[in-house]
Amino acid sequence: MISLLLQQLRRDGVSEITLAVGHRGNLLEDYIGDGSSFGLTVNYQREQSPLGTAGPLGLMSQQSDRFLVCNGDVLTTLNFAGFAAFHRNLGSALTLAVHQREWSVDLGVVEMNGEGLIGSFEEKPVRPYLANMGIYMAEPRILDLVPENTAMDFPTLIDRLISMGEKVGAYKFDGYFRDVGRPEDYQQAQEDFKQESAWFLTGERG
Image 1: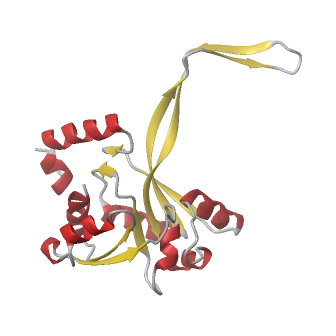
Image 2: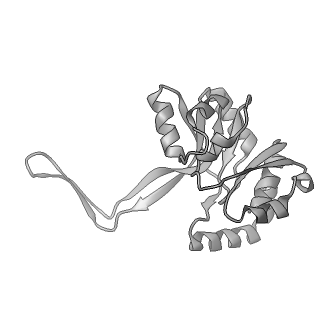
Image 3: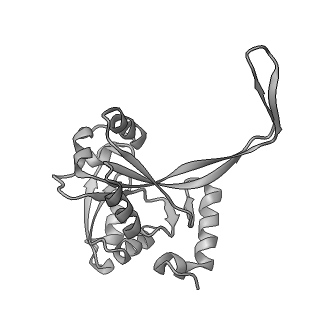
């Protein structure tokens, strides 16, 4: 999956990447090396203890340009160049890629008024929601909010930005997205990639 992600980023114009590695990070370093086999320059930030999803940004050296942050456990057909253009035009400090999902309630849902009367009743409703894809475009000023060698997740960073009055955007992506954090999702991702490998690599369906 890391190999695919590197190829996608190279396809969409990225030339330099920093990988935050921790437990068994040496395996990734041995496989990827300096990135030259992917047509990239790859650097490494080594965590001495788990820093969360945003904490590794505190290890970055001075950054003057906007940058992309991506979890390593997602399979997607997102066009990163288009995502970057949306962020730039929006003028936000941080933009999240989001994907619409649905959750189902297995019981009847009742809404009541203040007098104990039922205002509405819906049997097993399905509700849409926007899920964070774990992919972000950011302006360098957000690094000032991430202390060095301190664990932090992106929800905390997002809350801080919003409380400061910064703009935090959302880019709604309707293409393929799957997080492989669960075994069943990982299995499905493997099957999907076998069937449509060219789609993930080129962005075009065969």
